[in-house]
Image 1 (spheres, rainbow, N blue to C red):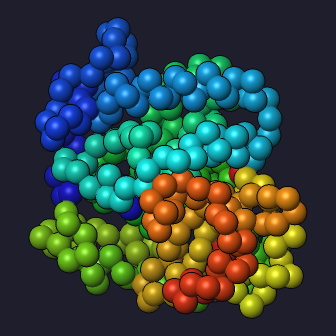
Image 2 (image 1 turned 180 degrees about the vertical axis):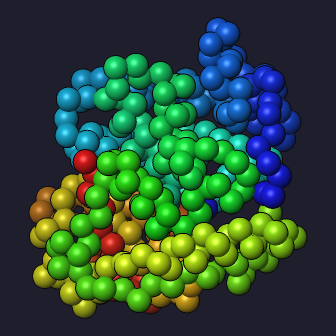
Length: 294
């Protein structure tokens, strides 16, 4: 989806058999830029392959480019909890993903492909701007754990726009409390009361915003307003939570479905069940919020 401050690392690390070893992305400038990034050589190799494949499409609108990127990632294994490593550090992993990291990864890859300098360092910077409050890694609480925080920050930076209200959504009585009231559900939060207090402050801030969503019952009359590449946020009916799952909207032969990292299929897939049917089939989802890339 931890109380230690960001540890300053003097060399580049990547995970290998549970140990940290020096990365092989050379040059003094690269080492300096990536000295606080957890990554592997496999990540760099895959990154370079993806960016090379996207070169021909960099002039496409972001919504179209992100679908190209998402399709490139089909089959990537689903693995939860890949960021839950102490100390808190920018972690790059292109070889496995969960739902929010998949959406974030494809967006950052597309941003990088469109840039004049599509390097691994630029990609890391794009991920950091999406994942951390004000793009600064400063311990566990600096990560944008609630998807709504992620949305608010990306909207403020002009990366995307939430269109839930614009396409007919109604106001949602959204309250945030789950993390602070269920610290035992988070490995690096349960033994740190001070960090729980910080998370609670974030929740209180989020409680001050207005939220809109499209209820399940209204979906059939609204899906025609959803476009390829829109980010679909499946709203949670669980008290204190906001978003349970995220994906990219995808029209497949006139049927609206989505591309996502599926926990049931354990990989990135084009969902076989259409969006409306899928949403109505999950009791813990009460509707959708929709984001449009800019």
